[in-house]
Length: 204
Image (cartoon, rainbow, N blue to C red):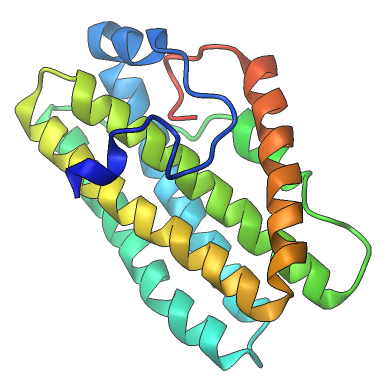
């Protein structure tokens, strides 16, 4: 599995790699902030998949595919909470998520129900891809062996979720159209990343 992650962003197709200063800043000063932010990211990931199930209950394959992802994302939240507790840290309050709030704006407001579904799936894929990339940096860059192993495991999991969301989008719409839209979203995400700058107290 490690071979799959040698090329930074290659498998994930991200247009803008994370600034390498991010992981150094996290490792030196911001583990608590990152763990708290990560915990809430897992909550939001579970909620996003649950929302898709609630809004598209007639799509049996989508429901059956996303149901275990909801459970897995919530388990990840519990495991991040355990990492906080091990270190004598509290969950703390959720902070404004400029990254996810920006990404959500990519979803089409008009168009067909299918167009909106595909955009939501692609946005979920994008968040999973960026999370996977960040987890890789943490796995490679942290000195804490427990956290390194933890983030390697989650990196692999998020890569699987990313592929699942892309595959679902291609199931419900023509592949060429999905892939074209995916490239548009990737370009928008790169611009968003540039505007946010390096934020060592956020997972994204």
